[in-house]
Image (cartoon, rainbow, N blue to C red; front, side, top):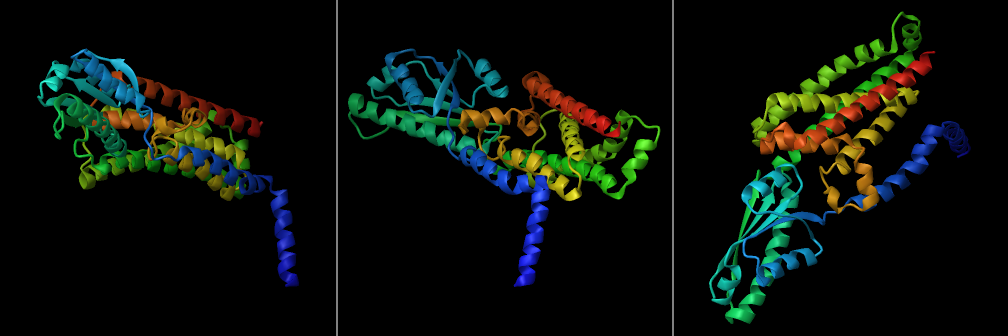
Length: 370
């Protein structure tokens, strides 16, 4: 028992001396408990809704009010034809469209069944299924009210016609696979780069590099280029395997996909280099890489949990997660077949993130060399 206590005292002193480990042990669990306790929410709220009201009567306005007052939907656009809402869905401005036909009020009052169309963006199968359930419930409630008040029978006054775009079968694989591509690419790039540089520190070879006639930029480029190629090859292999095994479609441009993937991996490599300039051991570098890449990519990118359902402070954090932007671009390319005009803001965000990370890593490494 005395020996065990001696080992315990020695280990405690070591932890106190190692401030990074102490920070990880004490601060990180509490931080992520608060962060993900608020972020993890399977409910889908604040669904961006567009309405095409071809009737413009009190009845149609009452149905629209039922959607808005349900607290699930936010009315963000009123459109006049299918081209308008198709563009809004493509760029991600809306997730659902309610189409009310002409003669809706007249047919409700004359006991005719009215077809009401709900169009849903299906690139996120889980969210699409939830949105469909919300819409059906609201329309069925409105239908029952009109049936009792105006028709007086037990049938439904409105026939709901839901349509799911880009993933009509609501296959979860078409939602999960793009997220896995982003996750695998981020993890492999960040961890491999961070560990490779720290490994040189531990082995003492970094001193030899500092004495060599080599600039910081040249060192960073030479250090990251192999891992960039490996990460790119791994990501493309995952995409091809997903097409073969899970039926992932490729409706867009391969060239644009590779360009988007390159920007994403460049940012991941920059993050790995940034971590390597802070960590002094491979163990610390691994822990920091996991915290900085795995958890944000999995939890705060919209991969598993919808960003719109998170509280405002958590949504603000998601703007610095590169996977958030890459997932939008990736799904726009492979599922929607959209052009760069749809997702160019995401490409700009990925470019800025990569430039910032690589610049900061280069400056920190240069200060350590001089």
